[in-house]
Length: 457
Ligand SMILES: O=P(O)(O)OC[C@H]1O[C@@](CO)(OP(=O)(O)O)[C@@H](O)[C@@H]1O
Image (tube, rainbow, N blue to C red):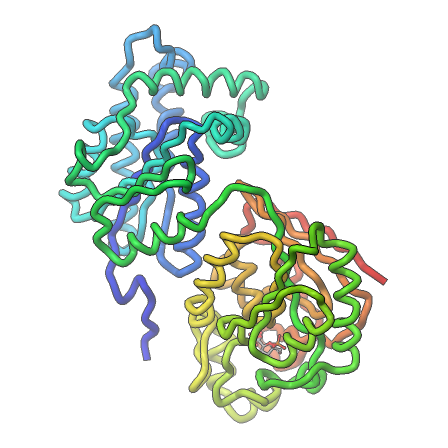
């Protein structure tokens, strides 16, 4: 049976056109939307105008400081060409991806005239548009964004110094301030738009006329830029893990119980402000037993239950290979899409995890105790891991994973409890369990990643 995704059920050709003065977190928002929609398997790509601007500046022998000097007459030719190039790239991309996907036009798009032109060009090409303005007059947010901009905008990658960047960005802000027209429903009533005021402290919506647009609205409403930690752990080793069986609702093994005690110490030692910690588990016994001794508020989520192995539930991989050889091969061939008979695929798990991701985007001080497949999916979202790789990542037992979420990336630290456990990792092409050769996979695709292993005796 074909798998229905948001993309399949609803052919999409949407362009999210970002609007906002420099240092308003536009690239941050663009990157987050790319990550979220890609995780949901919707082809999504951000087109950053800055790259085209750099090219135009080079070709016309002009520097950014000359272009954005408010004393000079604005060089419309460079700005118009930059816009046209970006639009051309977007149109080309839509034809390459079979016309189904979401493009993000990451630019300043400061005036009604420009927005009108963009809207018309896209709609002439049957592309639906939503403008997304990041309006910000809170100087403290702008200041933080200015210092972050070096790592996000290609325009400043080669800056001589931070001060140099700050000066250039300030010039650019002043230049655009003179012409900038914020989005209003009275002036641009025909446009579909989302206006974020001071990040998401206030949101104004106009003509949000599709399911996908409303999903994007809901997602960005949950975003915040504050650095924070999210803590992840698998349950302790279970009886089924010992026997090499998958699924089920087994209790913890003796070593698993040891881990549940050890976790209290680890949390105490490594989780700052743990007095405010909240522990989330699945509805299955092994995660709840792992959380048992943690003296914090607990929430059970059905959405955190392990991938449903359907008619293979309770079998070992050897037994599956013997009883259902075709299924065994099909899963190895495409582990992300493969759905167990009467059960789930990784793609299905991602769909049901969406509310968890929304909640995690909105929260800090959460420890999620869940299962191998579910953790791979959550990890893939935060570390931007491609869907083909994510089902093959190694997420060992008896290890606490710390995700340090920063505005422009996530860093990982693994804290291993020194309590042995079996490996539940099955390499492609075999039914045997063993240590993963793929441990590096855990790092791939991440925006920023650094794994520091800590072993706690
Ligand atoms: O997708 P694969 O690699 O089979 O991993 C998922 C499997 O991991 C297991 C252990 O083998 O999860 P867990 O013990 O974390 O609940 C199975 O129950 C589950 O089917």
